[in-house]
Length: 206
Image (cartoon, rainbow, N blue to C red):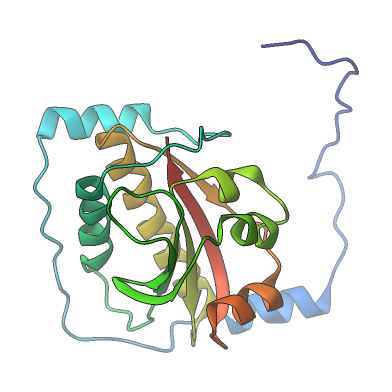
């Protein structure tokens, strides 16, 4: 690690408070669960316990990909994990779009789950949509999470749980992963062909 050229200024974030009616009301309105599904489905995972525990300890966010392809088997394993339910009562739904950039024996293009929507090399577009971040361009797969939520906080929590699973299964398979919280909302919606809100993005690769 290189030393910083300039010192980082220290700012205490708790020594002042500025009321904001818009933010406070938005928080209140999204704090109450408005959906309640009776049936709770339990996910079924089959992992080596020791390797899985190591994956939890070693889980990290990568900051650079080498533009290398991942194997088809690993990609299919990731898709399988995405299908597993989350044990909760909420009926909020998270849909996942995938920009496949570099997966062996899988056609490049935009997918919704396993369904190819548009074929083509969209790596540069994915990078641009994520505020010109190289990790979204150089990944094997870039994922966008969308939701037509009733309760924002619940939807974001579910997206976080799915994201954590992707982090862990990527580490388990020997792949790298990173969450992406910055993207052009309207342009990403247009690219995906959805009116649902984009609430998270991720990138997986080597």
